[in-house]
Each structure stands twice: as C-alpha cells, then as structure tokens.
Length: 175
Image (tube, rainbow, N blue to C red; front, side, top):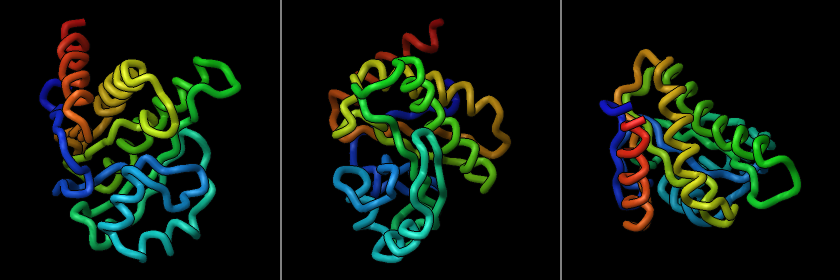
C-alpha cells in the first residue's frame, strides 16, 4: 500500500478525487459530520437519490454521482455502532467491509483515487486506534485486487487523527 497511501488533514468534501467515501447511516438519511458536509457540497439531488437506495446493511456500500461536489462519485457506507450488542469480531469484519466494498465499487468505475474519512470514529464511537488499524489492513488487502486504483487518501478532520494514521501506517508497512 506504500505507493497508494496519502494522509491529509482537512475537509473531505473539498478534495478533488474520483471517489469520496461518505460515513453514512444505514437509512442513508441526512446526518452531521462527513455526511452533512458531503450533502451540502453535492446539493439536494444527492438526498433525493439516496432516499431511493436505502436501507443498506452494516458494511455495505452504494455509489452515487458526486453531483455538485468536487468528487466524481460518492460511495456511501454504513459502519456498525461501537460499542453495541454483538460480537467484537463481527463488528470489526463489518468495518473492514466498509473499506473493501468502497474500494471495489471505485475500481468498477475506473477510479484512480479514493478518499476515506475516519469511518466510525465520530458518533458511532469506534476507538480511533482500532478503527485506524482496521482501515489500513482492509485497504491494503482490497487494493491489491484493483486494476485502476492508484491512490488511497485518508482524510482526517483533526491533525491528531492524521498523526495517528501516519504512525500506524509506518508501523503497518514495517510488518
């Protein structure tokens, strides 16, 4: 994943990439955080379309046009809530599927670049270290199967999150 990974601090909706990933809820209903920012950038057409696509399962991903957003496409994926009733391994596997399914969708649309937020670490309550490690491992595995994808961007809203991703990526690449 060394040639693919880039870690940024900033607003994901402002990135010029082929695909931006939305940390959505299962109902694909308008929310706050990344979802709210992407919907504001894309315009009302996005909500009209996602209303017809819901609900989605934990770990599932669906793609829409970017509409007025900077990205060509938006992939909407639903992380599991943490902590919640259920098996820890099941929750981690669902978060892995969020990343893997987003990468697969991007690749089927010949996307060269995809940007991820820190999925699950906001209102869904995931421990940041666990979510980061899960993201890096899932992206490394899924990106090995792609033909078009050239760059994965991890766009962190806070510099502390970006520092965590940089440190974990270095350790991940050493193993």
